[in-house]
Image (tube, rainbow over all chains, first blue to last red; front, side, top):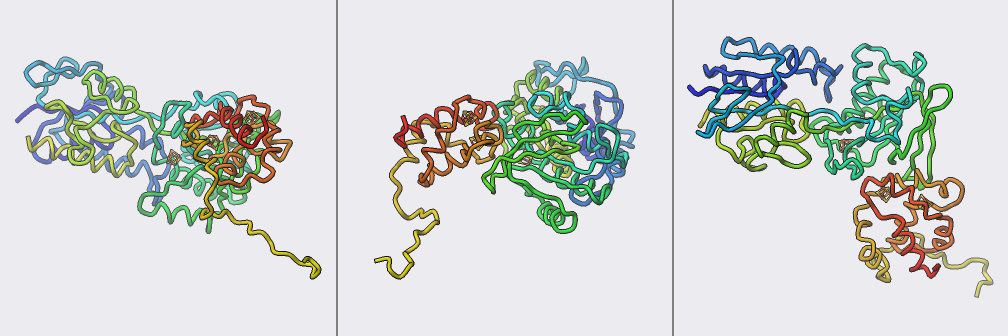
Length: 330
Length: 109
Ligand code: SF4
Ligand code: SF4
Ligand code: SF4
């Protein structure tokens, strides 16, 4: 059988490796970090059913427990090049087929300076909020329990100023999920979500939105936050417009949570460029987004998961499995 | 005529059936980036003039685009053309250009 390498041990990479190994195919799985699935292990609970992220990650990781899967942790893939005879060289090793599953990174909120991230202590990213939720303890800049929390959608997405015109697809439902979790931890807090559009496209997302209104008393404000400043006592002063009222709005909160979007990871950018499969915004491009979404324009080179575009865990897992099937058939 | 103490009320709804006078199309032609506006309110949120007067930049350009121009010219006078709104607009709308054109259309310049 041919030699196969998968680059990136996220949901897509792991599922692809497990699918191949189940068919008695040997796989080298490269992972730049120490452990697989760091993006999932970062989370507390997963939308829309509040499954425990670590438990899901453990179940996925267990699939690597197969003698045919050779996990190379701490192995950054610096060079992926064509060998000339239709094969691919990964860090000096030659493979017949290579699957890229290098995933995403979150938008660096420092780039939206007007929102005060890294300047005012009450401003956090959704990743940091996730960490607080994981620890079950939410605190404001002074270490107290916050009484008023605002979430802001579309940070680093749908924004010409950052060059990211696309919608990151997951932050809307993530904000609703996080707001509900915050409510469970702090029953009497005031919780606001500032949005431009709420994109509840997935199964049970819209119901989660309804629940947020009906059971959890989350308040939705239709307006973008233009700027945030700090107060002397560590709170955050926010300027927005209530576009439904047609009036400028200001509000002081204990925390402002920026829902940061998804961008191609460093690895995705680097490999897409090296292999000349650059898609939009540095993501990797497949051969055809409708009917050939795992092959690329190069023979023997495949792509799956969030290295192509923002994608949910479910979609990434399914896409990894689909890539494995595609790869086996050739 | 008005001796009964009542008069016919003018409808307050936006009547999309009445042909507009082409101002919206003219505005879009002259400031093409305005097509991209998603009504997010970022411009109004950041506008200093809007904090102290009844001028609301998002509402103003929306109003002109649906031909609701009553009182609009006077509201637009509050704009200082500082351009702050353009710094925050996520769609890159040329708001300053838009305001100048709106003023011209309403006979203010
Ligand atoms: S999913 Fe929602 S918050 Fe995220 S970019 Fe799209 S519209 Fe904005
Ligand atoms: S900030 Fe831009 S997109 Fe938002 S309402 Fe103003 S002009 Fe429209
Ligand atoms: S240019 Fe006019 S509308 Fe824009 S922020 Fe300045 S005063 Fe407000």
